[in-house]
Length: 321
Ligand code: HEC
Ligand code: HEC
Image (cartoon, rainbow, N blue to C red; front, side, top):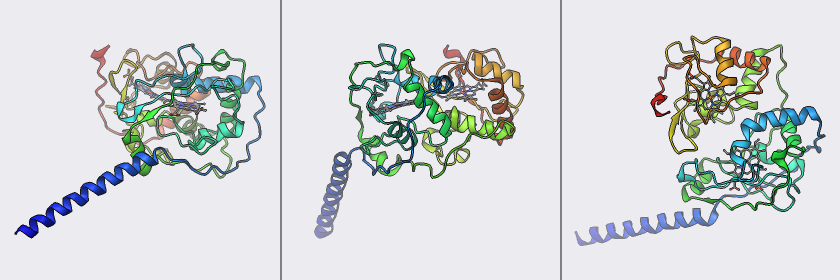
């Protein structure tokens, strides 16, 4: 009997040592670095068209997280992130050579936005989104905007505050958050004759509607967006800037719980003016997409009609404000 007990004690001790060793390994490994391969990405020609397009994309894809206390993209504490991630600060991405990305080559920016890896291979976990489906031309436009004379991107000398990723974030970098391969082929925007394909591109590429509008960020499929769990069926819990819980809307064509009874007009008003079919004002983090062209609205509308309807009644908590 005694020897069985002793064996048990040894076993437990061994388990504790193993668990401790594993935890130490995760702490020391930290956020991993990856090998950065050379890519063929010539410097972007900054044209007024690209700057305009880039600003339109950045206004819904970058500015929210990177706008700092001086109004420029100087970085800030992302206090709206779940605290499980740790204390996360976005970076200064203005033209400052010292504190911003003024010294980065265009290929470095492109590589980071596609794969999540900085020029030294340092990987940025899920709190910095990746843009694997953005077309090459839209990517060039975002970069042109970063080089432009727009106030947002003028040099700010606010130094980046280093993030303090949590143990969980480091652990997730071992099992879930991984570098995304740089695309093997060019990504070209579908042409405007194929509205459904164009709409799919807008929802999964240029504007990335699907991560927020599918079931959960944890089960989104970045490689094949349409395979994400509960694709566009809403119910993903978001934390607002005031730390309130807010659930995303079901935007599949389900008649009862989605937007199956909406018209294209209704969608245009919701997207551009933040008013839904019931006259309710849409709240953050759903931003107004004021710059959408008529073609873009039409394409998103046509595409949303083709998405499988999901019956999912989301509690929108309208009483909260
Ligand atoms: C959800 C918030 C969020 C969004 C949206 C976002 N970023 Fe970031 N970004 C971050 C965070 C956080 C970091 C820094 C992570 C770290 O180093 O700990 C970062 C880092 C970066 C860096 C690296 C800078 C450096 O010096 O390390 C660049 C460049 C960048 N972002 C550009 C962009 C661009 C361009 C967009 C839009 C296309 C964008 N980001 C959208 C949160 C965001
Ligand atoms: C950052 C996350 C986020 C992104 C990106 C996003 N949405 Fe939303 N969206 C939300 C949230 C949250 C709501 C609910 C707002 C509320 O309840 O006030 C919402 C609401 C909506 C609604 C209103 C539906 C209704 O029944 O009231 C529509 C339509 C919609 N989004 C479409 C889109 C489209 C199309 C895109 C891409 C062009 C998009 N959203 C991008 C978070 C997001």
